[in-house]
Image 1 (tube, rainbow, N blue to C red):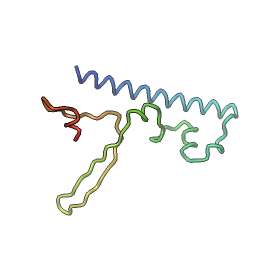
Image 2: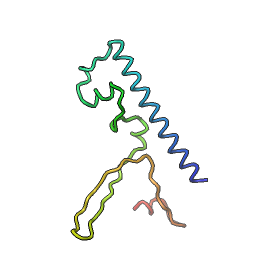
Image 3: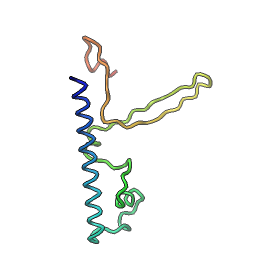
Length: 108
């Protein structure tokens, strides 16, 4: 049952986020066609990419502002001890909770 709820939450967050981004891009295209918004007024490459309809990683919605976090994975080489890190965005984070333990204790 918990897995179904988790999958539903992921589906819901992703679908709402994609719909909001599509609507934002469609509104920008309408404004470009009507002459309300010109490419030169956007100023940045990101703005030009968004106005042209390409979706970028930087498209954020209220879903991202509320639910998104960044997880840093660090990997250490056993031979040379070099540490490399990679940041990954997530909308949900699974936490194992031991029996008779509090969520606060597990997040430490």
